[in-house]
Length: 88
Image 1 (tube, helix red, strand yellow):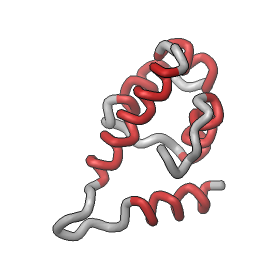
Image 2 (cartoon, rainbow, N blue to C red):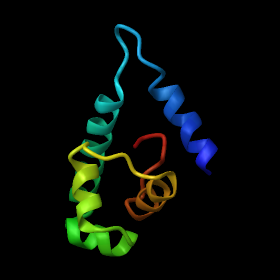
Image 3 (spheres, rainbow, N blue to C red):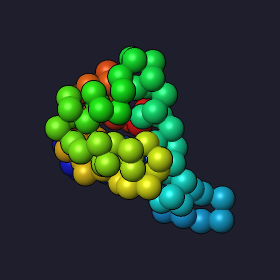
């Protein structure tokens, strides 16, 4: 699963050149998508944290684009939010 996730990330966000996204850009975009999808599903940060087994601090940091999630946590959150990993 981990290799699959990284291959999708590499396709969507290749290493930086002058016009490519940075890691920070990627994290912010990922956070925005997490926030949008959890809002659509009417899940609070607390509920998402509880259901995913992650701390509220981790969820908040991910939604703000301040922290990268581990691959297994990305999979878990995508499953909870009915999201395809490649969208995230």
